[in-house]
Structures are given as structure tokens and as C-alpha cells.
Length: 364
Image (cartoon, rainbow, N blue to C red; front, top):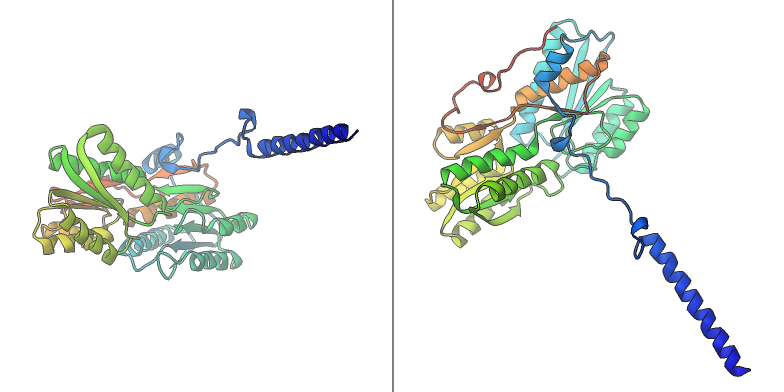
């Protein structure tokens, strides 16, 4: 009888353990391929199959639509401490003025966070604009997620959202900006040609949370891997868009790598910091940034910084305002609208931007 009880107990315990393991596997997907969670790729405007260049939008949709009533645009940038965002503001203000001169009852209120790490502060600005019932929002978030709650609230209040430049807002109505991955590709191609397709290079990354930083780095790495097997990326570290941090990194790398030939930086602010370190070292190291800010242009003209990939924020700001008004006027726009970019070096640094990107005003 005792043997029978022991046997039944053993069977019961084994059954319980088996059932528990089976339930766990069902929940986690382990041991059952059909139950594995499906991985969904995050929204990426660089690879959107339906993305369209802004000039194509103009060709397809024609003249600007009329928008009746008062239009209050609210715009939020990362931080005006960076010249790039001040120039984008200038572009949006210029675009707004042009539309006002052409009969639109439009105003623009553009603000920024206290710094490029102030995610919560930036969200608070957006929520305040929603509470004040702005007509549409033009947003450039600090990270891919910090403004998502605000956009959800905007949608509930029927306020359209234009995601301008970066980071990425997956639930925005429209994205307006350049292909960030191409920033890195253009820089890689230029550097490779200058160093003969071989040698040691390094990358200064912006904030890892930022879409543009990830894509610019990826574009640079992938281009080198596919087209310049002789180029070796010896270092890549983030400097959080900070000039002083980038300078410190460069000083370390210059000492560590006597054969370092080039440093690619995810933006011009960091590139200018790197250039300071290169100047002090008296070494011949190429420095390439991204953004096309005025100080970078001046540095290139002086023969210091070697190149920048300009995404023309002055014109991008105007395009963002235009696309917001096209949307408000009832025109159907694609999810992704790409804006122009070009590599600027000593050969074209004095060429007018309008000529480089073939800029034309919208038809009213």
C-alpha cells in the first residue's frame, strides 16, 4: 500500500511539473516555433517604400490649396543651443511669412527644450500647445519615444502632427526630413576617395537614442563595408552631440592611433570639437560632420574642417510649413517626404544653396 501511495505521488508531481513547464513554454514561445512572438520592425523613414521627395509632391499636387480660417502652427525643436535648430526655426519662420504674404491667416510659435537631453521638458511644451488648441504641430523629438504620449493626445484632439527631421515619431501623420542613412553614406564615400580606399578611421556618434545618430553611423559603416574593404573603423563612441566631449575623444584617439586618417562625426557641433583637437595635434586628419551649420561652412572656408553633409535646415523648415498647409488644405500626402541634402567641401562651399538643391518657391 505504501509503495502504491509513493508511486501515485510521484506521478502527480511529475504531471504538475510537466504542466508548469508546458504553460511557461506557451507564454514565452520556447519549444514551440508557432508560438514565438513576431518581431515587428520599427518605423524607419529611410527605407519607406512609399517615400517621396518634396519636389515630386509639388509636381503631383500642383499649387498650394487654400486653407480657410486662422492657422496656428506649434513647432518644437530639440534645443536652440545648437545652431542647426536655430536655423530650422529661421526656415519655418521664413516659410510662415511667405504664406502670410500670400493670403494665409497663419502664425507660428516655435519653442525648444532646455537642452538636447531634456526629454520631459520637450514633452511638456507639446502638451501645452495641445491644450491651447494649435491647428497643427511640427515636432523634432529628442528621442524616438519621448513625444509619443503628446502625439497620442494630439490625435485625440484632431491636431495633425508633422514629424520634422528626427527623432522618429512612429504615430505621427507625416515625416518630413532627409534620409539620415544617406548622411553617413555620403561622408563615407567622400572620405574613402580622399584616403585612397584604405586606412584607419573613427566615428563620433551623437546620442544613441537618436534615430539620426544610429542611421548616420549605420550608413557610414555599411558603405565602407561594401565599397572600401581597406578602410578600418578603429573606434566609434558617442559624445551626445557635445563639442567638448567630442574634442576629448579625438584627443585620445589621435594619441592612440598614429595612422588615423579621418574622423566622421554625426553632427557639425561635434566635428568642430574634433577639429580643435586635430588643429592642436598638427596632424593631417580629415574631419567630416553633418548638418551644414554656418560655423562648419566657415571652418571649411578656412581650410580646417574638410566637409559637412548639409541637410539645409533653412529650406527644410520652409518645406515642413508647406507640407503642413497642404495637409490642412485637404491634399493627400504620403507618410514620408524626403528633403534635400548634399556634401559640402572646398569645391562647393561658396556655391549658393539654392543652386545646389535647385530650390524653387511653391506655386500659390
